[in-house]
Length: 398
Ligand SMILES: Cc1ncc(COP(=O)(O)O)c(C=O)c1O
Image 1 (tube, rainbow, N blue to C red):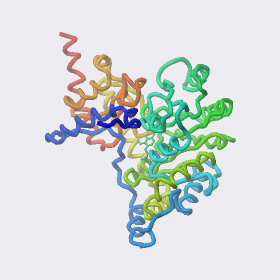
Image 2 (image 1 turned 90 degrees about the horizontal axis):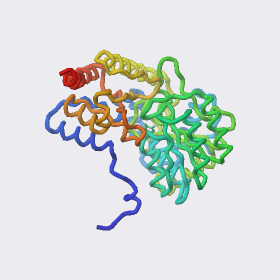
Image 3 (image 1 turned 90 degrees about the vertical axis):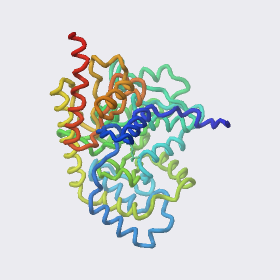
Image 4 (image 1 turned 135 degrees about the horizontal axis):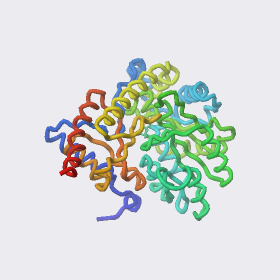
């Protein structure tokens, strides 16, 4: 069989181990509570769906659209940024619509990286942050987000001293999937300063911009004066606006990077279905209340999950951001590792979670819950877990 060099560099998805097992069990008739994949389950707000229906009836929207997004959508993106972050952007040169943040990130990295280039990527991470670099035939240097001296930036500074050739790109994302770690604006100030000192480009994935709790506000890296000299930011309509299947996101900031992405996308696609772009424009220009309502649903699920697990003796902190909860494997099971523990939770407790190892070796020792089932189902998951968590304790007592 012929070998495909780019495919050879893409290992099988670790997260698929649990997903495949879950599919098999469901096929066999098991009721699995699926807190595995971060696939938002809330319906898209009605006025956005209504606009899609209306726009899709208009034959003008049936033709090829603009690869970088129609002007009204790019203007809506810039106005949204101005309202939310007080950041000024030029819709012609500093904003591009993408087919979801994932597509935007992969093609951006493909556009700016090549063989011999190095990107610094936190570990654990949302997989495409590392694999976009691999797909571009460039190399990844992982910086641990969970262990080592100092904070992530201190570790990055130390790594920078020993890496040759000099890294070209830093890919970060806060609020962070999977660890739920959040940062303040001062962190981004230091990142921008560091990037300028080392002539690094920065890609910041702000997919969870809206999903924040308890008064915490996620800053944009572009709020740092001069950030546009080195950084772009990605946003996703999938999370706050509950539009994951629509595939809409955008990239804003540094005009050279936005320009490179615009160029490569002009070769690859004709843009999203125009009716989707029209409806997304309405979403961004419309009431932010719809996002806040979704956030409140996720907050209640978070509280239900974290408080419920604490009651059965599995304690972990409440995240301030994202739609995830990041939990250390309970001590009696830690030696199993996160993949085996996730399989165990699935087969014995009928609860699907994502093993931390699936996000990189520094995610080992943890599992990630996605808050994508309702509170009733979350309580069912806690009951399912209770019996198995208590089993080895009995064994130990005997
Ligand atoms: C950090 C991060 N970025 C991007 C995405 C995907 O966004 P989109 O649906 O816009 O491609 C996800 C989805 O889980 C994510 O966690």
